Amino acid sequence: MTEKDVYQFYNDKVKILYSEIEARNNTLPVELLFEIHSAFDHLKRIHIDGESEDRCAEKAFSHLKRGLLDTFKLKLKYHNDDCTKLLQSKTDLRFVDNGKFLPSLLGKRKEIINHATEARTFESKNDIDAAFEKWYEVSGLIDEFEKEFFDPLKIQWAKKINFLFNSWTFIVGVVSGIIGSAIVQYLFPGLFRFLKKQ
Image (cartoon, rainbow, N blue to C red):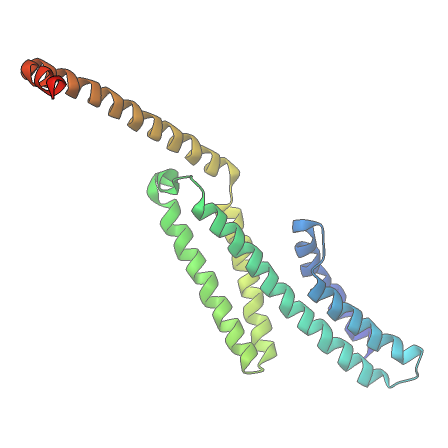
């Protein structure tokens, strides 16, 4: 492996995904910064300490791979946080897309979790190439999910419908209570006088 291979991996893989993570909160996670720092510390040893390019490049590459794996996991964590917020919001998602939105969302979320579980399984078996392949699938599924289900127009529409439905339910409840009281008072006028005496 050469120094250029490490830079190519950094440019083509690591930088793209970490830029996506950075854009979410305008910060880079410390875990990723440590791995990038360690990788470039190994690369400087080629030029400063006169160590073997192949050996230093391999070690740098290993740090970048670990950083990339951490970045995939952070992307999944942020996605799960956003998904949980949406599902726990006071928005009734059953109204969206004629009731198809919520079941579809839950099904695709389960698919993401299943793929992520497979990726972690490959990692635990030290099959890093298979793990990377599966993590890229997870990343793509998350991107598709967020385009489809984090649509602010649909969520805002669901909030409005939910507000109208709750308002209507409250009004019907109040009117029903008033009508019920009037019927009871009309049918049993002596009952209220009896209750007042008690």
